[in-house]
Length: 199
Length: 379
Image (cartoon, rainbow over all chains, first blue to last red; front, side, top):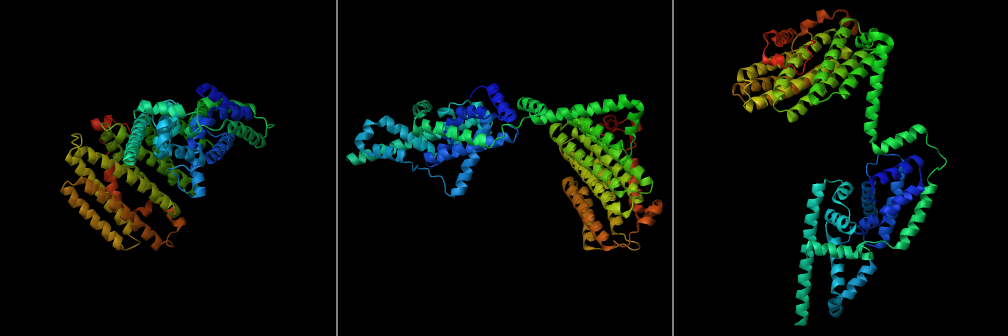
């Protein structure tokens, strides 16, 4: 949702008229972003789905209580963040950097074969980027996802993360560099292993 | 991998599951469930009032806090205008002269608050706080002149005075950061004004019943705190090479301050007949002696720390003395002869009298007087 005015009117409809349809429109606009934000913080798609649902339900309750909402998108990200934290508190387990999702495991297994590795190099690159992205520290990962996957502007990211625009630019630069470095390192290690196996 | 390659790779997976895209089926199904939950938790028949609609409408575009602030300022403005035009100038004068406990006194407080809210900058606000503190002190003095009927009213005014003094301290701190060039002048004026406040509070305190003495002592401690804060600014500026505060001025101010501390300590240690010596009073006296030495050596920062230590120790000595003789306080006697009670603190009185003379150089037309940014001059 890019129009601030439209967002303000939706907020008005939700708060003054308690219009569920207006909230539905908010859901349509933000569900993918919020899901992605949660997805990279948990270990399975199912957990991401549950936590995304919880985020929107909490957002509705928050809006219903008529509290101050300067920015809807920032509110949703903030709720999502606390929902994820609560989730980890509840399950008392740490975030796994290596995903346990079947879908992703099968992709890795697939790419494990040497022949397939060559055949699907691009595909493996993608997998590698995603896996390394998950290994980044939280604030780096968030900023990369918001910028490159959700295509948010710097000011939108700044609002969502509660940081200044210049801070976000610096974070993005550092995050991109960190991700590139770790991918390069991984790539070099893979080539060395392949060479060893050939020998 | 360059940033561009990274971006391309990430964007190529953004619509895939591994790129964090949700199942379309789940998105739709979850929407239906969410809408159902939303409808179940909402009373759709409950109608918002027109006022509620307006509040939401404006509240969404303008933060509620700003709206509330604007409404408050407008309300107060209308109240004042209404009072002036509704009751004529007589009513305006009436609320200005209203004493604590009177019906129009709250109006007076409201107008003061409105002035503070509408103050254009920190310097002006600090000046207003000084004027308001002056008003509170006048009220305390007037209340002390007659037998106290309702101690709570006096305690309330003392507490309001304390708040203004704290606001003055905050104002000084704020000026210290925002206007470092002009803060020394303000600090000097504030230090003098605090001496006047100390004197007025001491005089008023002598006439007030024992039950109010802790409140008076509390207010005097706050004034002490501001004095020390103001002196800290003056010392800081002096050490930074500010020529408007020569060494002699600093030394005199420290000397006044030490005499005042000694007088206060004497008062705290003196009971009915003989002075009481406690470890804390000894420590306070030792700290005073150390402060004197430090001033001689021009170690002003350290001397200031010592003076603050003396103030704290004096407070503790006073508390010990209060605990030791609670039964001796007889309100009726105290109230009947307020002026006669004073001999308990002759030294302090003398010192404070001399101190009270200090702000007088107004007629000399010095720069310190012309720049009276803090005081209203009403005292």
